[in-house]
Length: 51
Image 1 (spheres, one colour):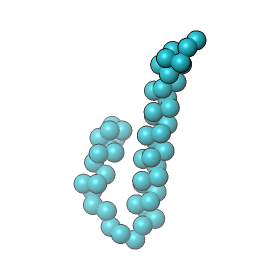
Image 2 (image 1 turned 60 degrees about the vertical axis):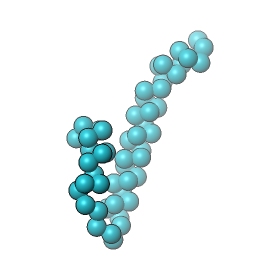
Image 3 (image 1 turned 135 degrees about the vertical axis):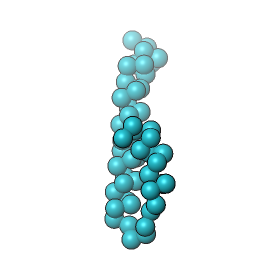
């Protein structure tokens, strides 16, 4: 197997894991923050993760 085949197999899973980790860290930061975050700031992540 060459690198392009491996990237085709594992790339989508890796991209999903990175997106999920980023979304989790953002939600965790919002929950732990004392600053109020409006719902508008949730929309890009909610739409891209199809909530």
